[in-house]
Image (cartoon, rainbow, N blue to C red):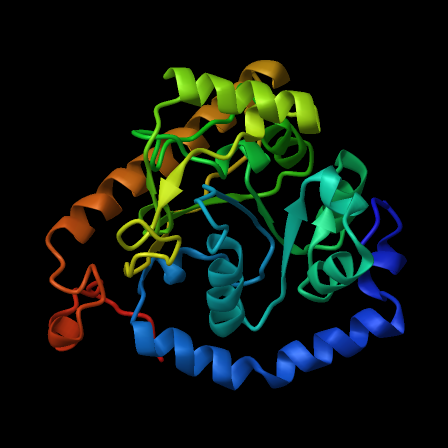
Length: 290
């Protein structure tokens, strides 16, 4: 997977990538059965524009499970492949990793590649927080770390591309962070990461799963797609003002989703995947079809 604005190269990857894509496609029934077994809470699929022309804007969680889950349910609902926009650093990853991500539909995010995808009416997925949103220190669960990033809004306004906020709750509960960002050990972690990888924003906090181990804690996933946000600029509003308005609308909508899903989870008997509560799991008024 390389950073390119050549739409032909994106749509027609090398044969090795296409072979991986066929393998993933053949495994889809097994993946669907496994996802259904865990009964994720999925809401708002009817909000998705039927033509597939939209940009999904989501929140990253600790292990990045949101990208495959979102893509899975978009494909089930609309029959379309989602194009996740990956960090540029992914383009420098080892070839097997790059090929797997490309087979999955991912494209290295850049303004040029995003414009090409929009011109071809692709369904796209972006996490404005990027990699900095993955590692969560204590009390940072389900918080957005966009740090003023608004490129997704600017490109969407430029192409009149609808934005669909999509939030996931559950991914930040698989591990418990033991350090706060401002603690001495937290600051030491940040400094070591900056020295070793030249990235102070991607410091892995000290975490634990079940007991003192790194085995993930069992938690149900809660996914919600919000109503689309129109990016068509009114004539009387300057473009810079409208871009900031669209960005803020998106952030507000996503933060509302995360707050509401945490409330749903709090009253769900099946939130920790207790088999005895399997039949009591809460579902939306219009549950996703299996």
